Image (cartoon, one colour):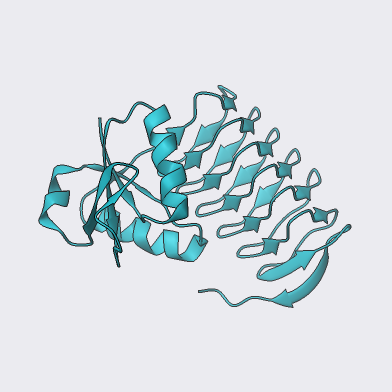
Length: 206
């Protein structure tokens, strides 16, 4: 199977491994500013290279939510179709839904009735409990825990080993720092940190 990975940096190498685990054997990278011709044994092409017309499925390998969203829409505008990568070790409820372009890394758990949007990153070992709703372009960090019935707005970042208690709402574009515990709703566009999580500053949407 063929797959185009957009972004040949550190996250790209991680997703290359994920794609291999998902059965993709013909993988290439595209990068806006390529610094090498090969990563993980796969060719790196500059954006716009005509060779890319041979690849119909893509994944955006950028950690920043806003950059990933822009490239996601650009790839779709070129007629490419977003793939869905789910590591074989992940435990995904049959009653959950996961959108195209999303990357589900090893040991992730997604509970019953969960909805995951498009172009998200569910990083290694994170847990999303029952009936939660994760909007598009979200990044849930390694080891993070999302409780039951939690709405995560689009572009949210949940840091490594952070936790959101059940029924707590995290507004669009907000950032939950590493190890933070959200016990109350977080308004749109805020960086919060600590236990319990407290607002640090507002962030501007990119």
